[in-house]
Amino acid sequence: MDGPPENDFCSICHANFHLPSQANCSHWYCSNCILQVWNHGPALQPCKCPLCRRPITLLIPSESTSRQLDNAEVSEILQRIQSYNRVFGERSEGLVQRVQDLPFLLRRLLRDIMDPQRSIPLVIRARVYLAAFLSAIYVLSPIDIIPEGVMGLIGLLDDFLIMFMCFLHVAALYRSVLLNRHGGSS
Image 1: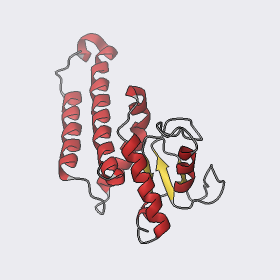
Image 2: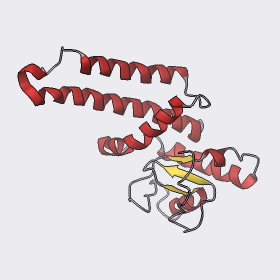
Image 3: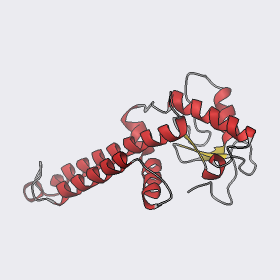
Image 4: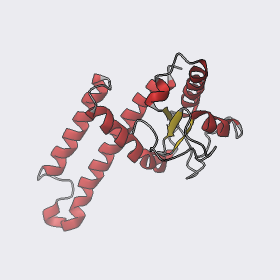
């Protein structure tokens, strides 16, 4: 997850990845390639993923790319990624965009929580744990808005809704962490 799949290549330049970055749609590109796609499109709109056509509102450079700060080329590309993320990172085009970003954000969050080398701010970590704990308590408790005993399978709907809201909340929290990490301060 720290980088693109081993046997994969950039779908823009069709070469091996050079300074790879992952978009919020989970596709990998060379950082410079995806930034050139954005430069050749409307400057006030996020570029669209060349593979799935979803708006790219967040670019996350790979760990290997982020560690090469002493290289002038890498430093310049990382600054361009930060400015891209500052402009488009706060944009979440409604519920559909947030739902589409869920797998990407939750996978990265789980990896960051499980890896002791990564740091997530304590307040964010506590809010993630609290949201997960409270939603688990609600799902497991016999007290429901729509009781399963009376409504049957329809009674599970409120449990799924609570879990879905928890996932959206946690993903929004983690998106703010990623934006702060890879977008810098405004």
